[in-house]
Structures are given as structure tokens and as C-alpha cells.
Figure: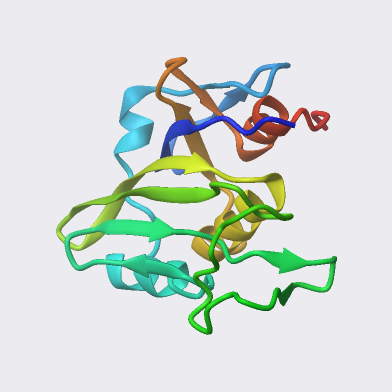
Length: 168
């Protein structure tokens, strides 16, 4: 499969109160109201940075800049290949995770609360899921805005579009 670069925004959405329901379409897209996207994430900027930096080779700057170049792995056991740097930043050459997998972006904040996460991603499915698990944990009440297409999708809807996984 040829990987493509995606320009995404991750948004939390308000579910409290009347009229805050989210309608999911058959293709995984979401129908949201603008006011639903004004809700910050439940965790602080510092906590989101801490979670992001649990990924081997990931970094988060005080200005909100984030980046990740996944290390190469061998087999399914997750062991780093010889030559991968101890800090987890592999050489990203040919192999299961290469060439050229990366993530870069910005945590957009207001009063130390993360309002949205802008990302440019070029990752295989396994690393996308690893990143999403690190950032969101069990919190999956997020809408993924596909910048080029101008639509919002659920995490499952993005998996379907990016990696051709079936929708539930």
C-alpha cells in the first residue's frame, strides 16, 4: 500500500446538553455543529505532551510543536532493529516502518487547554493506532477533520479512508 500524507485536525466534541448528539453517516463521516467543536480536550496541554512523548522518538515543544519519526521494528514483537538509536529515533530507512514515516504538527491551546491538534501524518496503520492510543487513551470522543476534503470523520471513519479497513 502506498502511504499518503494526511493533513488532519483532531477535535474533542461536546456531548453534554441538548442538541449535542453526533450523527455518523454510513461512510464514517460525522455531522457536527460548529459549537460542538469549541470544547477543549479533557486533558491539559502538559498531559497531552507527556502522553505524546511516551512514543519512542516523539517530542513535544513548549510552543505546542510536536513530531514523531517511528523507529524501525523487526517482526511482530516490537523489538527495535539493530542500528535504531537508543532514544527510539530510528533511521527510518527501508523496512516495516520505513521509508519516510513521520508525524508533525501543533497542539493549539487556549488557557493551557488543548482546543485541537493539527497534524501532518504519513504513517502506517499500526503507528497511527499507536499514536492515537498514546494521545487519547480510552477517550475516543474525537472528530478527525480531513483538511483537504473538508469533512469530519470518526476514528473508525479515518481508518476506513486511510487504510481501507471495514466500517463496523
